[in-house]
Amino acid sequence: MTVFAGIAFAVVGSLGKPVTPGTALLGVLRAEAVKILIIVALLWSVLAAYKEVVLLAFFGTFAASVLAFGISALVRDE
Image (cartoon, rainbow, N blue to C red; front, side, top):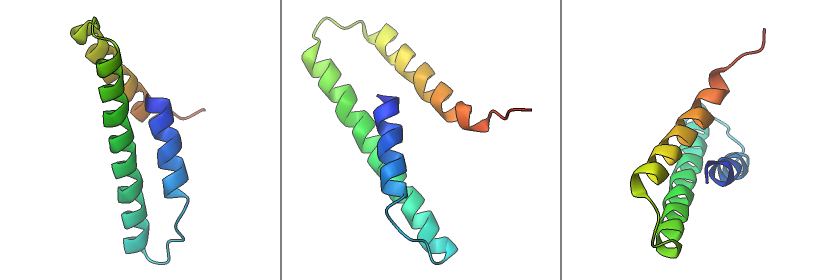
């Protein structure tokens, strides 16, 4: 889920040509909104399709993957 959301973030974020810092910020906020909408839609589709899903394990794994995906941008090679 987070991979698809990250791809959508990159695509939407690269659409605009930021002229000022304000327009750059709007582009990032738009991309983040699309990312959140895709995550919510994919979560809903999984929960609708799999009636027997173990909610604690599913949401725990989802939270761990979101954190790992977000933290991966902070890791630097030395």
